[in-house]
Length: 104
Image (cartoon, rainbow, N blue to C red):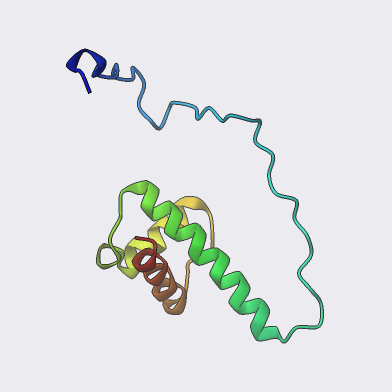
């Protein structure tokens, strides 16, 4: 690639926390559907735990915690408080680390 084609991007004038994200199409949240009836209670508990672990893993990655060994239970619980979900159990914290481990 010729050197003339390489140009530096201008630095943003706002921090990323203040900058709005531009999407190609208007954002519409996914339609929430009720969970299927007739499953054992443990299935619903596990399903909701997986959703919570996914939200927490995404929030940790967004905050700069990229490695599972950086995500201690205290860090996960403080992230949960920051994003407005109930404090996770030890099992959910373990699941968050597992998601981070396999996301690479």
